[in-house]
Amino acid sequence: MIRVILAEDQAMVRGALASLISLEPDIEVAGEAASGPQALEVALRVRPDVALLDIEMPGGDGIEAGERILRELPGCRVVILTTFGRPGYLRRAMEAGAAAFLVKDSPARELAAAIRRVHAGERVIDPGLAAAALSAGPNPLSPRERDILAAAADGSTIGDVARRLHLSEGTVRNYLSSAIQKTHSRNRVEAVQRARTQGWL
Image (tube, rainbow, N blue to C red; front, side, top):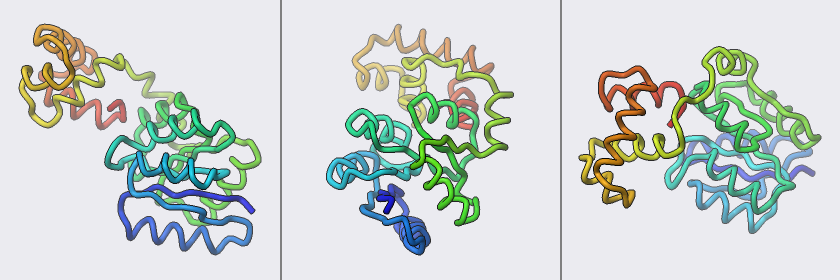
C-alpha cells in the first residue's frame, strides 16, 4: 500500500482529490493538510511514501513545504500539483527535489499513475510544461531579489520592506532596481506581475 499525504488549502478540492485517490486499491490517503507548515507536521507524524502538495497555500508554498519534508524525510517522494502551469514553478520544484510536477486538470487516472511511478523511483513531469520551462530559460532573479520583490508585492513602501527584512532602504532600492532590470519591466508593479506570470516568485 502506498501511503500518501495531501496538502491543499481549498477544502472542497482537497476532499475531491482524497476521494479520487482513495478509490485506488493500492493507494491510501494517510493524512491531509491545509497549509505548508501543516503539511510538514502531518508528514512528520504519518511518514508517508508520497506527499502531494499544492503550490499556492498559506504559510509558504508547496515547493518550500516539499523542500522541508525532503530534508526531514529523505525517503518521501514529493509531487507538486498546480492550477498554474508556469515554467518557473517547474524549475523551482525540480531544483527543490520534487519527483513530479502535475497540472490539476489532468485526468484522475494520470494522478494515480504518477503516484505509482514516483513511488517506484521515476520522475513525472507534464510534457507541455517541460517544453515551456526549457524555452523560458532559468529564473534570472537571485534569492534576495525574489524575497524583496515578494515583500514589495502588496504595495509596501521601501521603508516597510526594509524594516520587515531588516535591511537598509538603500539596499532594498538596489535589489528592486536590479529585479526590475532583470525582468525587463518599467517599475516594481510590472516586475512583480512578470515574475509571478513566469513562476519566479
